Length: 518
Image (cartoon, rainbow, N blue to C red; front, top):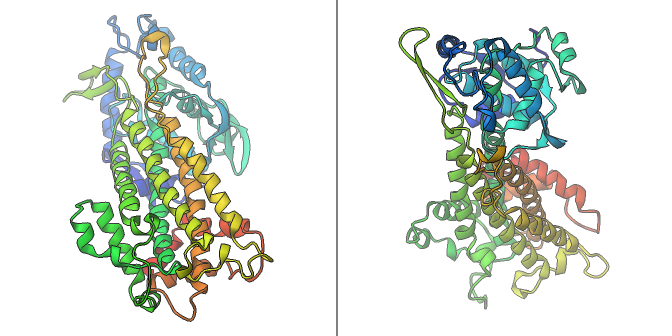
């Protein structure tokens, strides 16, 4: 089989959980995928159980019966292949803009990892073919809308499975084409589905898990940049660092708050700006957006930790139905119909993530507003950080943009998982809508990165007003990173390219690396 995509180190699928980093590396096509020997043995053992009952006169859900509310309909042995193929075709009902390639690849990696744990009853060939498609850079075109997040991410996964059997559309070498043609060019044979295999391919939480995995990495970058922006804003506004005293945060007992206060204080260590106004400063307290940054960003950080833990557990899960538990001898074992496909374990944390993101962005925009307003004469900042207020509007409208982005995030923060619409004639009467929670969280994270980028640009400009005094070493390293892509504002220019340049810094992790001195 050809390999025109992944050429880096291999991720070996087996009985263990995948890591977030491994899934991201597969999603970004920097790692190959292999099926380990323990996975091969586990899949062969569970498949023998399916083979033993395939032609049984007893009904076994999804093996010799229909699906959902049609599960009481028996299917004859000679129609089992057609049953699985028809399932994939009929469930490929997604609509809307296609999912990005990284989401689809992450979904495929998580699907292959779940199958490789040997609880789904598929032949090793099925997981191997998914791996081959990933390694060859063949990515199914998957519409983004259609999953209700229970009974698995049925419609999106059906579009993946459709490509696996040589039907539907894929993207390969940057071009959209028929799946059969791309697989033929890569010397990959389409899978002819046997009993249970179509159901195993579509009956999991792999889309919402993929969204959660990619989101987890994005949240890490967002958090690092938000802490850096907050620290830089303190000196840009000539604020105090008294509220960062570790004793204050220890008595609150909240780990995220303690961490943020320590990080901000470390970034400001050695600042010449802080002591420059320690005496004869008439201000008693800074606004909440400065004084309570550790409490707010810390609470968001704690919520992100909860999200990451849920994602990490899901990457070791099997979310198929029915599940196969092989016995000691080939063909022996139990097939249990249950509900691991239900997405609530991912839907709730994904909804929580957006709430956390909303507060990262919200308090960030308030600091930006405070800097640009020049309400506080002791900040020694010009209105809108303009080089010549009136003639130049400076960064006035950048705050408008931040406000608009925050407004959208507020709408996105309405949880998707709290409303229910039943499906499948009522047999599937409580759904999670986890994929919508995931899509909203990732959209909110993208918007928040732009809000943080705007604060970084404004805070960097604010520091210029206090030169030749320097901020802390960590803040100055972040300032230098921003200045490498955004020059000092000496006359009005369009801020949009500057914002996007700093967002790229955030996404790449360059802001966090600068803060750490990496």
